[in-house]
Length: 125
Image (cartoon, rainbow, N blue to C red; front, side, top):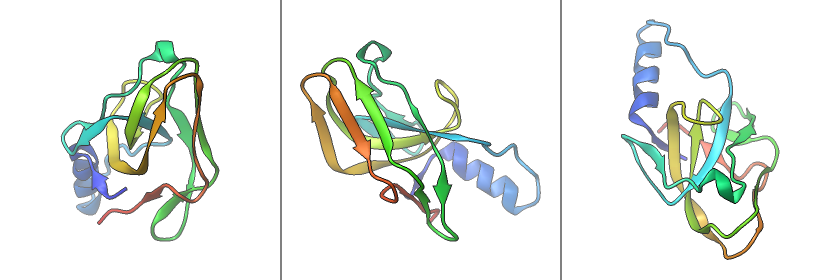
């Protein structure tokens, strides 16, 4: 995930010049159908589908990778989800980064989507 949002780019720029921005203390992984640097992830499923952003912790000395699987459970069909994003809040909040999924996930009924441990990589490039 190398596409930082404009918000994250601004946080990094302030940090680099010693302006001490308020950095996120936790991150949540989200799924959606698109994304842009300005908006971050777009097209998140409706909460009525059972969807909720999932907390994640990361590890690594360079590129950061999710330490544990990230599992999304759905109570109904959500169609195709093709993108993943990071936010600084479980709902609302600021988008931090986004990327296309390696393989889009399609749910035509209730089910789960799991991002395996170590497969979500965050790299500021």
